[in-house]
Amino acid sequence: MSEAGGERAGDEGSGELVRDLSRFLHGSPTPFHAVEQAASRLLDQGWVELARDAAWSPQQAAGPALVRRGGALVAWGPGDGAPGAPLRLVGAHTDSPGLRLRPRADGSRAGWRTLRVEVYGGALWNSWLDRDLRLAGRLAVVEPDGGVRTVLVDTVEGIARVPQLAIHLDREVNSAGLRLDPQRHLDPVWALERGDGTGVLQYLSELAGVEHSRVLGADVGLVDAQPPALLGAGRDLLASGRLDDLSCVWAGLRCLTATRAAGGPNVPILVCWDHEEVGSETSTGAAGTWLASVLERRAAALGGDRSEFLRSLAASRLVSADVAHAVHPNHVERHDHDHQLRPGGGPAVKHNANARYATDAPGAAGFVAACDAAGVPVQHYSHRNDLPCGSTVGPLVAAGLALDVVGVGPPILSMRSARERVAGGDVTAFVEALTAWTSLP
Ligand code: ZN
Image 1: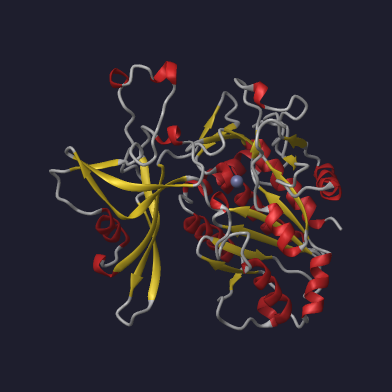
Image 2 (image 1 turned 120 degrees about the vertical axis):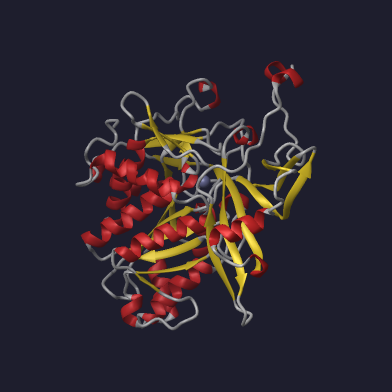
């Protein structure tokens, strides 16, 4: 592993941690699977799941506990049981850009059976061509009594492919550039017209073991089926889909379980939101009210009134954990000269004068101090003035809850590609930095 990861990351060592990250990435093709994996790991380690529609006892609210909703999750470690204790939140998002099945997903053209898809978020379309794509998501099953339950489904292996046009039929592609019309050019092929005619929803219903006629809704997407891989002579470069932002979800998860063992007065909290890639304005997105209501319910169950809850927020902080742009070796000029993020240089604090990132001076100082305490390197990112800067969940939470927020994340290459790259040591260093940050006053 790179020096940034070294063998500092606890007893498992950095190499084993990166393999654990790879398993988490491969097992999380959709936000629903990511939340299922995170919840199941926490439940295995003593967390208790709280029902959204049930009363929470003081013992339950004291934690460790979790509550989930679709592709979103809030989980907290134990604090001292005081409703006004300071909260240390790590927030990340579970969704990634890609292709989602339309309601009428079965298409047919010129001998091929296709999947009708809609583009989700700002994906790099070219990266979806000529890849073996896996279908995954959730099916909504209507029970005989009228109730609705959801089941996860995942083909795991590749089952579809968006074929690129042969160069003999597009002679200018290398000189004029690849042009894709998302309405006409991104539907994957998955069968022959002369096959047995099984529809995609029927196929997925049978795979999930549910009666097709009872599946009346589906949230299903396509993702790269290729498992994550460690590249490079030192195997220190992790290639995978969905590093943005599941690498940060995983880092927050590892931080939460590590801080539970450490104890301390602060309450560590992991927040995973869905729909960051499409603006966050949903019931499970960072612009919604779900986090605030969970936190207030937790404080009330511990015996605190609203005033105590608001006081606890005033002493609370959030790391908005989302990936940053590593400097691209073939396009160095696309990065501000003095803020180029080096692979292996540790997590990056993301700054933006126009508040596209929520970092301010105290927030940055606190995170840098945490990196110093953990003995990991840290970098600073600032975008070019002549290119629009991306954003993330941090500013939404800062505005909604008036929390102190710092935006941080590991630098990656090829953000929003179907397959991104990160130095594994930067993610494990991020876990160490987060763990130190959570316990600082
Ligand atoms: Zn992101």
